[in-house]
Amino acid sequence: MEPTRRRPPGWPLLVALANGRTRLPAERLAAAVRGKVVLVTGSSFGIGEATARRLAAAGATVLLVARTADRLQLVADGINQSGGTAYCYPADLADPAAVEELVRRVLADHGRVDVLVSNAGKSIRRSVADSYQRFHDIERTNAINYLGPAKLVLELLPSMRERRSGHIVNISTAGVRTPPMARWSAYLASKSAFDVWLRCVAQEIHGDGVTVSTVYMGLVHTRMSEPTAALNKLPGLTPEQAANQVCAAVAERPHHLAPGWVRPIGAVGDLLRVPTDQVLRRYFLRTEPKPKPPGDTP
Image 1: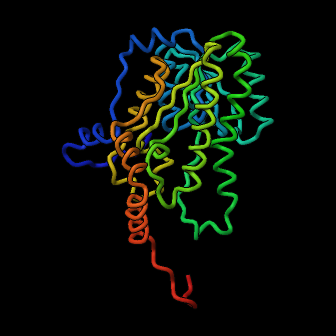
Image 2: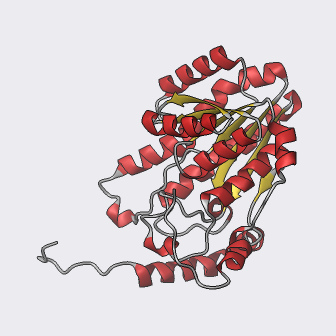
Image 3: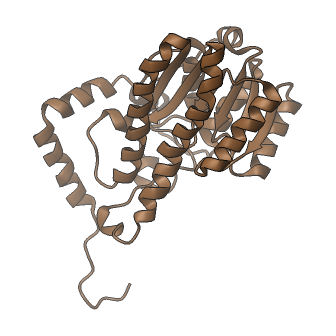
């Protein structure tokens, strides 16, 4: 469970205005997913766990994928004890061989995957000055946010296209549609890479009955966002509220979902790129810790 915080009056309305609130009726979700096989990556915690629980409650057979086998089993046990159907498939999506084995096992056990919810992700917020000796941060972030999801899609697509049926839901971030911000270079670059790759692929597979939806998610208060103190003060969704948006994408198959402010902010950033970059640069300089004088001990 995510920690409960004391919030000022009017906080729910502020959250709704900032991030959007989507609540799909239970009967509509059930009609869309009952009897379907849905694979959810990153389903041991946060958005993935909440999404898996709601889909299972609506009648889907949910395949839980994450690295932590023990935690996955706890989630699966909770779903199965509540009358749903869930299976655990521990796998490291950063390992291409593990992804191949995952898909082989899933197709052998269930025969198909009707819906892929690509939710697993790695967040990192670090200035370039703190990254000089940490190129592995870029490698790891890309492995989880871009290369791993792309490999999983490539492994699942042949069976989907052969059956002429399938749906891929990419859980992205609103940050890829708005002006880039300092300290988020590795994270936003990796999420943008998969977003553009999948949008290109979507044009090729649509004629084979395979559709793609992207959820440009606003801020969600999870374990992943917790270490960034500045984010904890901003209005954000709970994992359950975020799962409602994911389930809407699963059931209704829109091209994309995004908070209402994304389009105007993105348009302003494109039209006024130079002044926008200047504003964000000044913000970075104001919030960057002052360097220690030479000789100071840490």
